[in-house]
Image 1 (cartoon, rainbow, N blue to C red):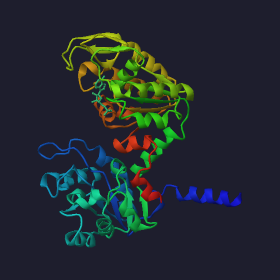
Image 2 (cartoon, rainbow, N blue to C red):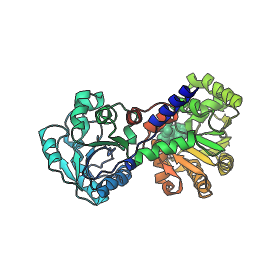
Image 3 (tube, rainbow, N blue to C red):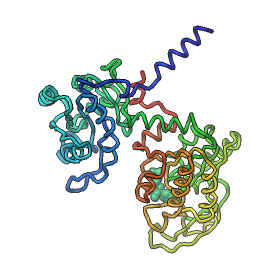
Image 4 (cartoon, rainbow, N blue to C red):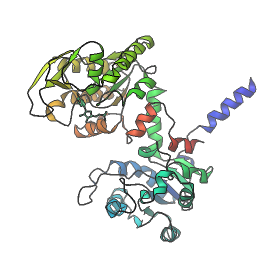
Length: 411
Ligand code: AMP
């Protein structure tokens, strides 16, 4: 018994999160994997600085300790070295946001980098060129990772957006640092927020899953169905469920090969005592177009030639009531085609309901590319508890998968 207990304790302690707060960086070079994969316009100006701002607390803590920062990132999907994907485009923006002039070196391994790193003084920041100019990065090449590892005394992973990839700089590199590796503030906060929803939540817990397809959310539904009290289904996914239940859905988005699966999910929810809430009405359109004719009908009675593009007013009221009674809320995926003004109302009303619940002390986590775009577009970003910076990474965590970038630090 005692041995089992000790083994469990050992396993637990091994899995405890080591963050940058566990280190004093005075006199140390921190090699930080950040996610500066930011959108650029045609003149190479950064159009959304969220990811840079998110890395700022980690960088400042290291500088304030008296250390220096060597930043590694990828940008876009270059095929070999391509100037349009150079991280040199973002140097001035990063400098402005951090408040320190950032140095740049036009490679990420090799002599020029060795030189730049060796002359880097404490309190300074060096940004390396796009890691993906080398195929070895995405291949998770061990030699490439080892070369990168030589540039820092302590490895910090603060890139949640790529934590689900076993790339050289996100996971493989960690083995060269033994105990000198940790999570940055951003990655730690992402892990903590998802854990708070999945494992440590105050009940009732409600998950809102919208977006286009059941197939892309099925892993999430299966993993959370036992952990939450309510699942609100919205967006294009709705119609696969409604058709499976015998409704008429006109020309709405549907995955005919997922009808049986939709019924299985409903059955499983019943067995686990989880309530699934489907839209009862929809805003339908006679074309996939903002200027199409529209009407509001019951979700299960959509005429031929029409398609559901948003949830209707009765649905918004129902969903708002569930949310008002929730203490923990997870939102992934819009409730309609919010990119078109006439089909954004359901998503906006949902955002209002979540903001309202958050102001009354519920914990709300928003993640997944399109819901993040929606909360930003409609001004809810400051009114929810946490907006995740990782789309794919967040989905994989919600699916219950181990993320290589996280495991590499924990193990
Ligand atoms: P996802 O990436 O799966 O979260 O899907 C997001 C996309 O789903 C957005 O671009 C929405 O426009 C789209 N979407 C939401 N509701 C519908 C709908 N009723 N019909 C078609 N597409 C939808």
